[in-house]
Image (cartoon, rainbow, N blue to C red; front, side):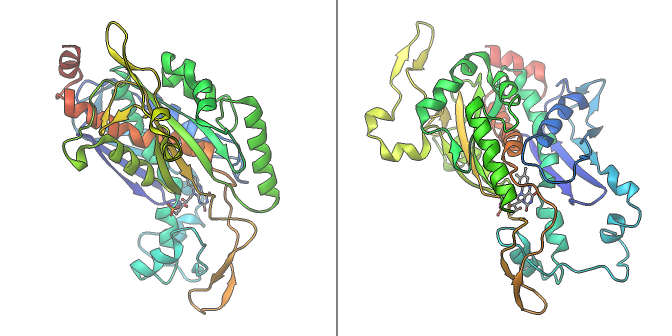
Length: 391
Ligand SMILES: Cc1cc2nc3c(=O)[nH]c(=O)nc-3n(C[C@H](O)[C@H](O)[C@H](O)COP(=O)(O)O)c2cc1C
């Protein structure tokens, strides 16, 4: 089974990740990982700091001659700005010495981990909470997820996402989205993300792209922020990943956990999701057909999952992201030291991170699907799994 952990602070010297349980013989390079790291850094709605340092995950162990060796894979993303910033972050984030005069952060932002994090860990300074709760950590989650994606690719399983809604701009119904995505279900989900990536907000529809960009412009001017809804599609999925036999083996439950464990995600839908509650059964359940070679469905409103198991149709999963908590226009808060009612202080921040969060969501579900696959067809090496999968 694949497990991974991340370590690192937003303004620390590095992000570190360890991915364990990857079978031996998987071809992987730093470039495979860099592709998705670069995608995570692109998207309309980013904040002011223009010169974004390009993330690069260095593989430090577990890979030899371009292939995994079956042991833990360790990766490091260096924060190069940290090394150059001698008087700044290396002092604020110093692991040994607290220098004189370092300002304590005492104004918690509503919607962020600030207040509860400081209460829970008994900090008199919000800095440590900001540093680890920040979505900077998702850089390493993308790197770890890229390893699982690379594994899935060996078996024709592809993952790709696109944006459905940003603020008031978005698709109106399920059928409209299915029409937009139909061709990608045949060609594979990588073709879906490649096309979506051509839009600056990762939306497959040109008119909606324009509306979404305008939404972001409007709320940037208003000093506010925006969230939205995205959809992730997984193609090439075999029948029967996950199981109905025990609650903790149901793949829909595991996918939802992966999405909800990501910063700012507030809801998950599988297939038709919440709309199922407004339709009668005949407009929800997918009728069963036989193509001559396999069982299939005339529609895929179940999102490729029934009874906690994959049906063989593409998995369709959606997530909703709340608006970013850090905003130019302040909200009311209370100073943790003086207890004075006051306003939040602005820190540099994105206006809308949703297009970038799509890449994070693609990445966090990859290990879940890889594990369900390994549970069914697993082995210690890629060639052993290939033998089992092809029989
Ligand atoms: C890709 C991505 C980028 C984010 N960027 C920011 C940001 O710039 N500023 C901010 O305040 N929150 C940002 N967030 C959201 C916070 O990390 C998140 O709201 C916070 O950790 C609190 O966790 P919760 O929203 O899950 O309760 C981002 C989230 C994601 C997924």
